[in-house]
Length: 50
Image 1 (cartoon, helix red, strand yellow):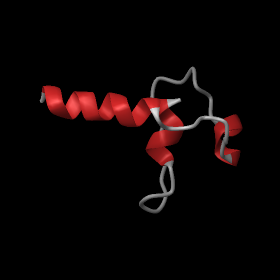
Image 2 (cartoon, rainbow, N blue to C red):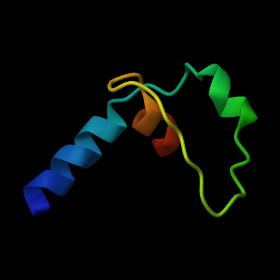
Image 3 (cartoon, rainbow, N blue to C red):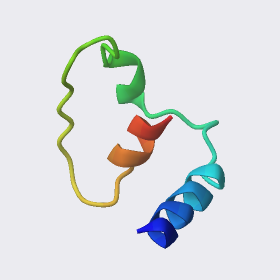
Protein backbone atom coordinates (compact mmCIF):
# COMPACT_ATOMS: atom_id res chain seq x y z
CA UNK A 1 0.00 0.00 0.00
CA UNK A 2 2.86 2.35 0.78
CA UNK A 3 4.32 1.85 -2.71
CA UNK A 4 0.96 2.68 -4.26
CA UNK A 5 0.69 5.85 -2.19
CA UNK A 6 4.21 6.91 -3.19
CA UNK A 7 3.39 6.36 -6.86
CA UNK A 8 0.20 8.42 -6.44
CA UNK A 9 2.17 11.27 -4.85
CA UNK A 10 4.76 11.18 -7.66
CA UNK A 11 2.09 11.26 -10.36
CA UNK A 12 0.24 14.07 -8.60
CA UNK A 13 3.38 16.19 -8.30
CA UNK A 14 4.19 15.70 -11.99
CA UNK A 15 0.71 16.65 -13.18
CA UNK A 16 0.56 20.18 -14.54
CA UNK A 17 -2.30 22.33 -13.29
CA UNK A 18 -2.04 25.30 -15.63
CA UNK A 19 -4.84 24.05 -17.91
CA UNK A 20 -8.39 24.16 -16.50
CA UNK A 21 -11.36 22.55 -18.18
CA UNK A 22 -14.52 24.57 -18.82
CA UNK A 23 -16.37 22.63 -16.11
CA UNK A 24 -13.93 23.77 -13.41
CA UNK A 25 -15.51 27.23 -13.17
CA UNK A 26 -19.07 25.85 -13.09
CA UNK A 27 -18.58 23.60 -10.05
CA UNK A 28 -19.61 24.79 -6.61
CA UNK A 29 -16.57 23.48 -4.70
CA UNK A 30 -18.26 24.24 -1.34
CA UNK A 31 -20.86 21.53 -1.96
CA UNK A 32 -20.73 18.42 0.19
CA UNK A 33 -20.96 16.09 -2.79
CA UNK A 34 -20.08 16.60 -6.43
CA UNK A 35 -20.90 14.17 -9.22
CA UNK A 36 -19.04 14.38 -12.51
CA UNK A 37 -19.91 12.04 -15.35
CA UNK A 38 -18.06 11.54 -18.57
CA UNK A 39 -16.04 9.17 -20.70
CA UNK A 40 -13.00 7.36 -19.36
CA UNK A 41 -9.68 9.14 -19.56
CA UNK A 42 -10.92 12.68 -20.08
CA UNK A 43 -9.45 14.16 -16.87
CA UNK A 44 -12.27 14.05 -14.32
CA UNK A 45 -10.06 12.82 -11.48
CA UNK A 46 -7.18 15.11 -12.39
CA UNK A 47 -9.52 18.09 -12.27
CA UNK A 48 -10.74 17.16 -8.79
CA UNK A 49 -7.21 16.69 -7.43
CA UNK A 50 -6.25 20.31 -8.05
